[in-house]
Image (cartoon, rainbow, N blue to C red; front, side, top):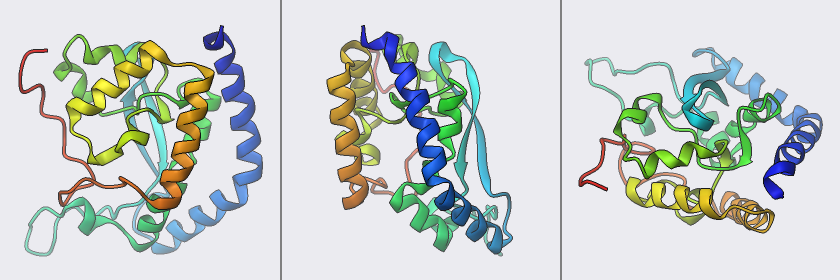
Length: 204
């Protein structure tokens, strides 16, 4: 039953939040624009439900400069702007995804939409994460976020696909708020926010 009303709840809530959070989004956009280091929004094609490609929107948190003066590739941490670091820690960078929810491309809760290039690397079981709409937050995010291995993330994603309910979504929502306040699991333990998925180490 819940899967039939989840979309309506997403739409109503997203419209409400766009209205009340528009001042915060406006301030974030102005602060990013003041830096004059690229566009306000970060846009990237990601696979959604059933692997259908859509464009995800986020506030840009990184410099558009990819290499230092010596030509060395900069890490994600090196490219993170001061305002971007604040937006990321507070999850304000995620707010433009409310428009993805309004368009029906995302949900508030679901597996995070990952890079398009990962589609050919998933095992059949991991590919099941695309059986539902991707979310701004999800079961993997509240159980470790970027501190998890890829295998652990995908296991949490598939578990969500098989067990999601209103009660579970509310649990994820509450834990998401707690994680934002505590800034828990924002980054991995490397110099990048999260290492790229390289494929499965063993056959699943």
